[in-house]
Length: 276
Image (tube, one colour):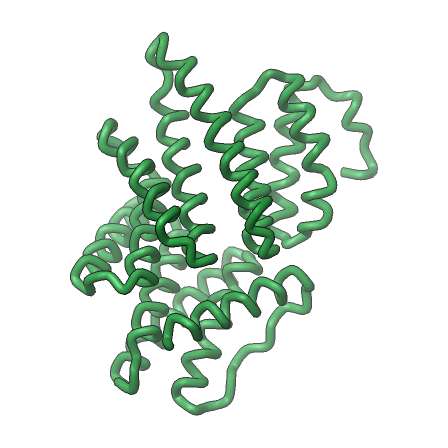
């Protein structure tokens, strides 16, 4: 990116390019580079008059700030993402073209809820999940983002010590849609959460540790295949905590990336606190 003059591009193309570049930086865990280009990307999206692009840029920022443990900026970016896309949806409702963007607004709320859960802001998480669900009720569509709504709801129930039957119901429905959509990423996340559920409810029951190990291994295998460092290290951290509960040596060393290590320290504490 640095080798090219983006100023030569048409503003709409430049705005989209910057948003996609930020997605790549997030996947590669190059958070400094992503944040460094965010102001220019937002400025270009505003100049292009593209509320959708501007909203997506803010959504990406919210994910990064969540994993940087900067909750103030995480919520600020998430609020901006929701506000911008909601404005676009309301504009589109005048001619009935809002369905696609309205469904993605549900995903904005879902991402917001995920950040809230990781930071134990459960009341706010529930509010965002309720807002997402209210949108899904309007449309009989079950895309990949609905799968993510289901397993984020599962995550909420695990952390909130919800009913086991409800957690397993959400797991089964989410996995059904993930497999139907052939989405490996989502399957990996469901395996991770299934393993998390068994570990945090372990309380000395070794049979639950055995149940935790297999889905965690599946999550690790999928993350390795997809080359997604954050999700891979999350699953490795979970597996290491299973090893600790089994009183055996931790299996995995973590990627030596400052942002990854900061986040994984939080993940390990989060899971330990859940275990009690």
